[in-house]
Image (tube, rainbow, N blue to C red; front, side):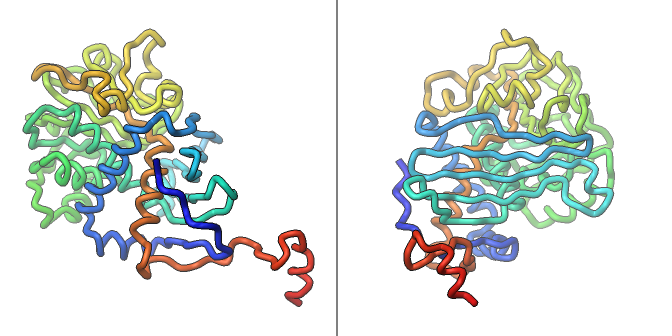
Length: 349
């Protein structure tokens, strides 16, 4: 059980983008990814403690805006996040986010935070958490197909948690691959730019698909996936958005976060409801097997779930305690007499 939060205050800690970046550099990005991976796994082990619902989504022809809430009975967490694949054409991020924590006993918020960076970190940490349970033992090579905003985080999480040492990169936009090569120079990873998705998968024990197009797409075809591979399908998910050919799912053992959400948004939306899936939490607790053989193909059909955001925000709140990596926001009205809100307004003349 998470420790109770302290009693409410009128001032709410706020972690800005600037302070989030300062914190990541202070902790070290690989250390932070390992910490987040462990925190998320701890919360998956107590899955039944949480309220769970598919995210609340507002879809448009341009993208999606979503709210992702959950609570463990002591702490409430909620994230606002969007997914707009065409934003990059206007110099905007495809995904932006912010989040909050609140005290269940009072309803008072106790943390506000940017979550564009934090979501990238928690998504990468979740991928690595799944891979350490599902990927082939000793896998050192990862293919990364889709080299956009999430790419470097995914690569560094797999390096920090799973020991990946070689990254084979492909994107339909060569500029995205060049950006990733530049950003990961000096990371300790061997970097290989590839001319096609098929070339990228050659020799890879882990294949990560990380694309953003809002359509049924075939980023991986069946012939690209050999025996023993672990597939990490994390691209921007929504109804009508997939990355894998259906035949791959017919050969793979598929693991998911929260089935009611994954059936709507994940790769498995291509399948009928009798298609067998395993909840990742059951693998983590030992209630279900993960990788059973060297030839098995495992698929983590990741769509992101609110418990992962809860974990990231609780981790963040603990990390900023006693530091200057936040500022106080005057967010909550705090009249001397809680029944006299109007009097507080009048006295502010």
